[in-house]
Amino acid sequence: MDIQLHTINRAAVLRYLRHADETPDELVAEQLAEAADIVLRLARPRAVYRLFDLERTDGSTRLRGTAFTCEGRDICAHLRAADQCILMAATLGAAVEQEMRRVQVTDMPLTTILDATASTAIEQICDTLQEDLAAWAAERGRFVTARFSPGYGDMPLAQQRILCAVLDTAKIGLSVTEHFLLTPRKSVTAMLGLCPAPVAERPSACAVCKMGNTCAQRKAGVPCEKPFIQ
Image (tube, rainbow, N blue to C red; front, side, top):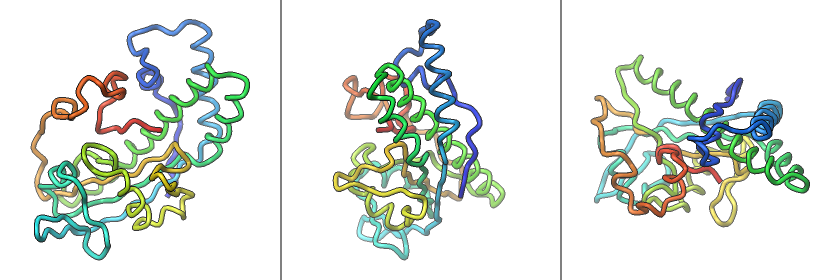
């Protein structure tokens, strides 16, 4: 499915740049506008998702009908109240990444801002998809959890590969490298639990994270539910 991207959240871009509390000067403001224009012009957002029943046997949580078994205590705890799971993947496409490589040769400051802008854009795409899924679930008296991605908590990044295989993300131009990174880089995979009742509030991710004050994402002011994009 295609998802429209009409604007870029500049405040979120500044958080990625770790300048959330600063007013950008004239040059930076111009580069922010230029980066937003590039992303909006070149991005071709696409997404795919599928719904699965969950099976729990011998302490394992599996997606019924697949070879996908959740690895790590954190993702199993995240899905504890769910009886179904939605796998999702989204990407901005290759053109933005190609432009970043081109700009990098001559303008590193703009490249840095462009990278943060693209990261913000793919998160907006994921937010839009999650909102649509939550609305779909609500019409059926169901509730979705926050999204949870491979590499977060103790869920191995290696699960990226089987998640993409189950979703057949090649059809949206998304693949996984030998080191389990997504390509194009400005892409996200995630899991959302589908629950029969509202999910109780849980402690903030930063409050329970083992990374503590060493986490670059925490310093950037980006919540863990929105994974730090490559």
